Length: 226
Image 1 (cartoon, one colour):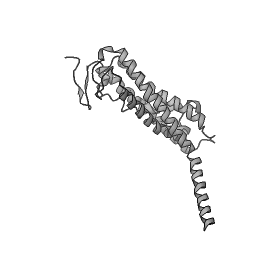
Image 2: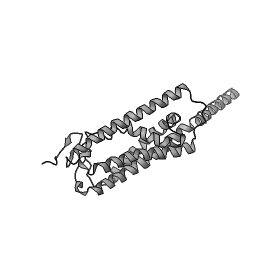
Image 3: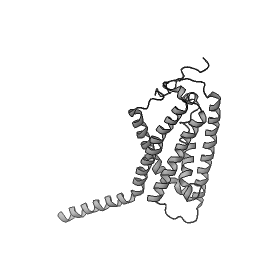
Image 4: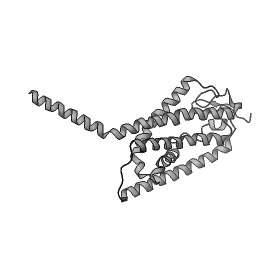
């Protein structure tokens, strides 16, 4: 009985060790993704907001659509941004790990390509033309450039770190499946960026038309025309 129990324990330990080794790339992806998101989405977004506030001091004291006070940088708000950035990064890391071999660029450009892909897809809700915050801050071009750059920073940082600590295995000749997937990613990226660019162009017509926002997506509280 003792021998049978010992054999069972050894089998469990061996299986656990095998699972631990197998999941190593995913664990690295989650950790590095969280770090990259913390830096780009957390620290980066806070710095971007600071630059925007400094560029348009006339908006100090007004309210954003999320009921944040422009120019008022609180500890709670900063911690929320850091946490959200890290959480988003833990999802981005495994996603990059899973699709990097099919990104339609040379291996050294995988991080940049991933940044552009995420900008054109998950970046769409962030750059919502209906968000009146984009009507408050001027110049609008600076706001769009800064927040767009955060996606590229995240992709570059994530790609550099994950490719270093968990390099992609050497691949053989490209199969039909890989060509189809790469083509699909290319199409999704191009369509996403074109759609995003179209929405951004429309934002310039509304630039400066709102002095402050009503929270909860209810729109402009004080139009600049009044």
